[in-house]
Length: 325
Image (cartoon, rainbow, N blue to C red):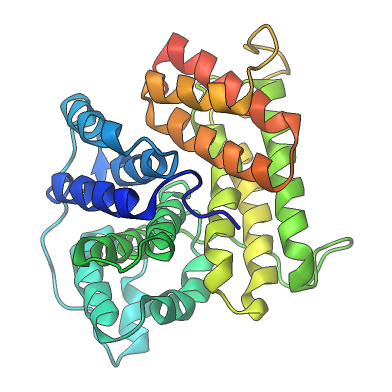
């Protein structure tokens, strides 16, 4: 599975440390109540082998977005009280407490162990911040899988992703037990994820919803889950896929414009090749255009499908017209 496709690991690591240092004081959200995308977008740019563009993109993004300061700490998340930890899930006032908790855990042992321990807990709340807790965590995991040696900034970004997911924990309600035709074995999951992301890319391109951004997460959230699979035990793969499927359905149900009639704002013309669509997204500079182009490029590389290019093309064109949100 590709990690930082086309990117030199050393340049990638340097770009990520620089980005995370520039974003150290940025809170988790900006007005009105949108998740901060800058760390994820910086990681996507570095993955796309555009590390030299990360600093200028961050500085422009910081001028455009009114980021909120994160809440002050309330009280430490206890190490030895599962009930108290459970009670703190979904309480955004505790986000700084969650960052401190995960920083401590990541200092104690391998980061993979922390993700594996918390992944099944947090999957139940994977709609957190419209899937952005999950997505931010997945981008941080890819960084740690890619760099030769994780830095303190990179480990802290994983702590922040997990903390945001925990603090915005939103139950998804995945049905218990397999449904007819459901994925039931770990070896089925990679192909099923490809079917899921391609189907949602096609649906996005056909419907071209307005506003164009929210429904994009029906593609990027399942694609983010794929980034974490290599560090998970096989026993968590089927459950992760079921969550991906449920997330996509929940996004379509919740996204404004998700029920738009087909063709309502569908761009004319055929999409360009994926590499040109990526370059176009980088030029546009909108967070979701960059992240969708990277996810579609990655999914297309695993199993080529013209629907990925159609989705990226649709968002690029509509972002040029609307600015994104």
